[in-house]
Image (cartoon, rainbow, N blue to C red; front, side):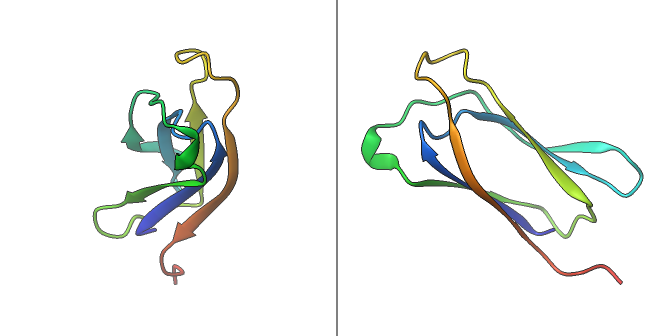
Length: 87
């Protein structure tokens, strides 16, 4: 993978951790943050996470922290994984 795009449509950017699941069965963190508050006009919102180089991965795990801002739930509409197929 070369980039991960997380599309959010309600109370965006409460994503605090994004990890890639490697073929070896490990989770490698590629993004860490704290929950941030955005105004309603920030929706829809896309969190773009560019990756250094190309990382071989079988999946992605996203952790959302809704306990910090008392905004309610976060809605993730889609996750786009950008990259090239492994041989």
